[in-house]
Image (cartoon, rainbow, N blue to C red; front, side, top):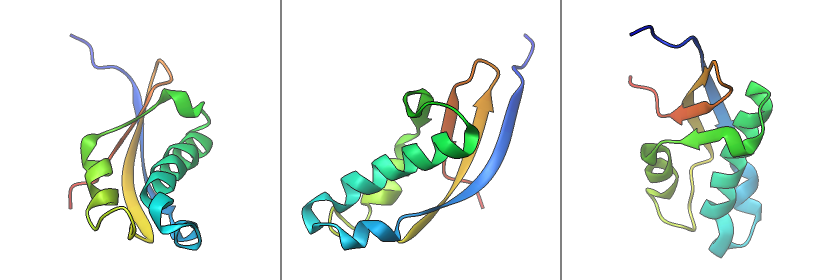
Length: 90
């Protein structure tokens, strides 16, 4: 089976703005910000961005009130325009 054509990039998503928001919404806003940031960088609608469960776990690791200030992610854009966001393996 032929492998689909894809583009890979490593991005650092800034999430510092979430710390200026109400404590009860910080992690939720951080997840939305990741989707919007990746969509803008890869030039696709945010509806076409799929995030792996490990991205969700990384944002929520310290709870709803203390998301990380920035997050490194690996982004893959497939030929059909879909974008996959994962945590890079180090």
